[in-house]
Image 1: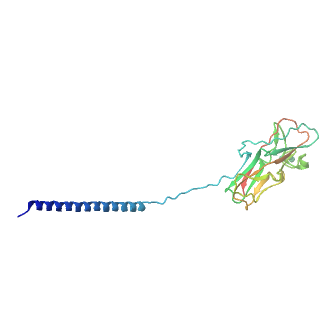
Image 2: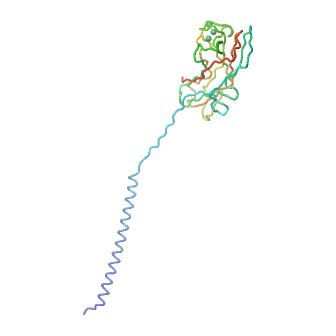
Image 3: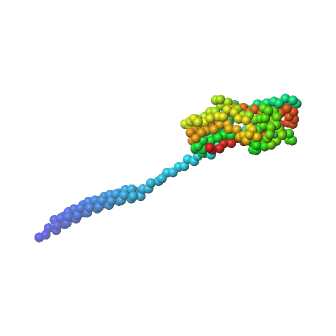
Length: 247
Ligand SMILES: [Ca+2]
Ligand SMILES: [Ca+2]
Ligand SMILES: [Ca+2]
């Protein structure tokens, strides 16, 4: 005789064990599947990584010479002003002015633009330029007779300009790690049209100089003769160019 209740209990027990068994299998399967997804995720993450090449270009600054103030602010239209002179009928005189006065300085920058050195010069736009005031003029590049008489240059005017740089007037600029070795000032120069000396070198750097650096030059003395009987026509002017060239 079958004990129905006993069988039923056995069946329930059996089913319950099966359910537990299935649950264990289910969660084990879920765990395995999640683990596989995790591994796959890591693998995809590794396989999907990329190397980004960071690039940067530091370009050389253009070779430059400017006139700046004590704080290195550019002075757009620097002037060199001589003291006033009265008319003198018989005497040839000399006036003195200062280029790059105490609150101004010539500022040279070479930040990898000229690796073989550079040269800073002063010149006029043309060797035949003169000091002019309306119809009147006198010369700037004729040292004949100490700048007091006309020589064999193209014009018939007298007058001579000389440039003098001072010792200890050449200094390093703003670059803290740059060297000023092999950067030299030229003590003096005289414009001479007939001798072909149409530019005066103020400062230069040799090929051994630092390829990166900035320098200042100040207190440049300019001497200009005024011929006797030069008409007092008013204000005389002559533009001069401050230039820098790579060697
Ligand atoms: Ca001349
Ligand atoms: Ca002449
Ligand atoms: Ca002359």
